[in-house]
Length: 114
Length: 116
Image (cartoon, rainbow over all chains, first blue to last red):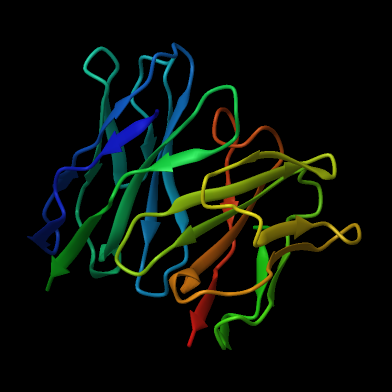
């Protein structure tokens, strides 16, 4: 079965600092996508960034970037210049290739301190 | 940006009652999903739906659950006889292609179901 592990249940950083959230996953596939979702207090699920496993270049979306280590099956999310609005739960997710479902990690609760 | 719409945002029901959660996926999307999140826990896959039939379902999606696309726009999740443990946030999602593996999954804002 697909597993996604987020080992940091909670993190907090000062505003404007950089923070890295870790995620490891387990798959036997070669081609797949990985995702980070943000869930603010409103509980909406918002896609932050996705990484294509067959691309060596790490994905970047403005202040959000990933450090993708395919061999280590590691997919960390870096948030630069953190803002108060970044306070949320962050979920890493990986698909089960060949079918449609996403498997989510248990989440990291990130708090940005003013 | 297009949105997945879910109604109601909050549903309260008595144990044993039937509930229907409604979703309007993005109009040109072909794949539809329901996920749920029990408070404080991770998001769990329930069911995927394509071409008017279930394409995959999880162990959670037992005979008490059913999904339907009654017309060209709505996608519903029915729980036939609710239990206390069905209390959760239910998310509808849709994607243009096969979700997860190569497509962006759009989530709705969720329906919080409270079973009393």
